[in-house]
Image (spheres, one colour):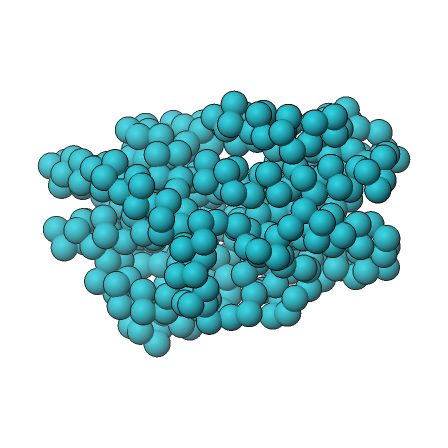
Length: 382
């Protein structure tokens, strides 16, 4: 089969981090095929590359078993409508961007009907829910892996996979633009800056933001000169502002619409919800405290399925607790504040973690957009 000169790709990205990754991938795909068409579920980074979003990505931005159940009917409805539309007018390939709970069932249905199915971002089968490999075998034709150890795992299960590096490692500069980022946000060069990243899902704002805001209040009481920046995902400002007044009234917190990369480049330390943002913080070589909190029942279910002692991506990739993790009941404002201040009080420790993150950055830098496009071109031609 010949590769089409102007392929049509259906894509689904289920949250802000997936939208960011998909936008970077689309940049590489459009460089290879300027006339391609892409459509499905996505967000603003994808639409900047001409993506036709039939549904916005935030419709799928739900995490945790209890939280998903509350929105199950709507999410299942979107999946069914999307599948039926794609089966009526098949694309050259479907590319699922992360969001495995949504995408794997959709991919299985499309693959069974002869549509090539590519999954970009391996589910964390090496961290939890390893039995997902059997589901993936029936759902996908190829997995594009972000981390170098992943293809060998899939090879053992007879699943085709390619390591393409992490697109964020290409997008984020090796040299951190700290001064320029501070200037763009309105911070002074000698300010001590703390970045607060509570997540991009509504459930994360509900469960995590109050703890981070209360931690900021604790830190400012101890260090009155601290400055705080908090990037706000699209559509979440109205949810966050009342929490700010409730938990950190009078604290010098600058809310930024998006601009998480500028916040990370500008800060001295970050308090970050577990997820892609922790890897972004590592690529900006920033010391951090990783945290998470969710509905207690979701936590109990997820905790039982964990294979590793670490939750945060930097710790998983470095195979140790290189940065603190304060999860669920441990994620108290006092403990979060103490862990962040401990970084500020130990410049040598900060310099050490910065060097380790720099080495990690170089390992993950593989021109992902081009590598992924090369792999996709081979899949289309097979």
